[in-house]
Length: 86
Image (cartoon, rainbow, N blue to C red):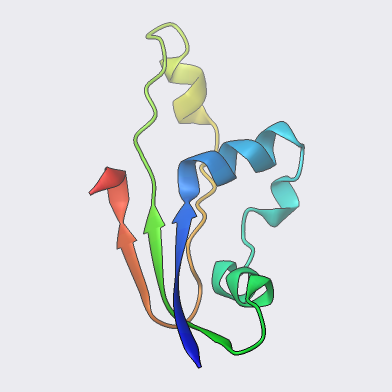
């Protein structure tokens, strides 16, 4: 059995879903998604989740803070949420 580590780019995933008007997928199970992408005889052993801070122009800052924040996070299993590119 080949062991596989999955890497999630949370920043691009979030904004890609947002741009596609797919907000209903903000809360998807990322490990299940990764598991469904594996080939036969592969096993997902770990998930690494990365994201980055978003900065907005000062004139838009109050609008952004008023919006509810959606967060993409692995929901089950072994994960390492290495935030902000660390």
